[in-house]
Image 1 (cartoon, rainbow, N blue to C red):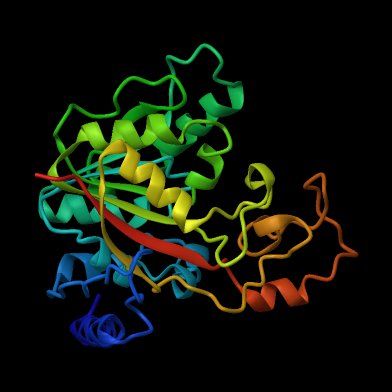
Image 2: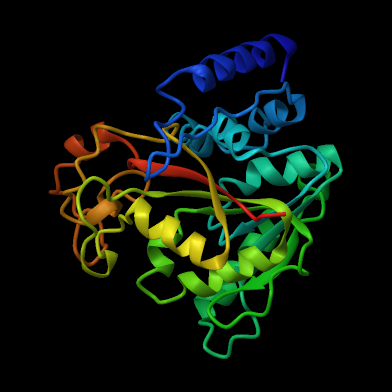
Length: 293
């Protein structure tokens, strides 16, 4: 990235993080979320602006705010970051090059090959992820850690600086996995380490039965994190979307990027997508928890 776009990006970040729109009113119970401390991190700017990022992923930045979110979560150079179930690798495209540039480590929590119930699709997904991020000149050496319902610890105890869970808690909670995963994250983190959370926010309405629409309540996430031993450390409105009415025919998956248009998931050309595409991606909570110590 050239120097001028980098300066512009840093200026925009400084403005957004100092505004009341970017920093939330605080956590439930009245605790105020301290504004994130801003420091010029050229490697992060360069990672977000990297030519290796597919245009479709870059187009999502206006909804996912990678620079603001990672700054809020406290990403720092030369750290160990674990990304749990990274999916197609939106965050991998940014975090793996960043860790390469700064001398850190990126761990991807992917399908658990030791799980006898792992599907062939899960195995193929892990292989595809490994192949996608095999170029060490760009991504460094991405560490693949088995992760799932019955997995062993995804990292040695007390070895990780930041654990990221992005849009996964709404799947783990109804499956009865949230306590295990929160516990695994807590064990892996160093004292003072951060659990970074981004997920589809049900608030202010109640959660749907078994979270069948994909939205989870902030209070549910905070309760699970506290149960594992975490201390709430900040809440932000960086990824809020007031256009999201949360009453879509196929739940949150009606919205981009999934853009589901039928109950069976098959494309329905007759479905009018205009309303949902105009909303954009979901309204999301952005939370930061700390392991005491």
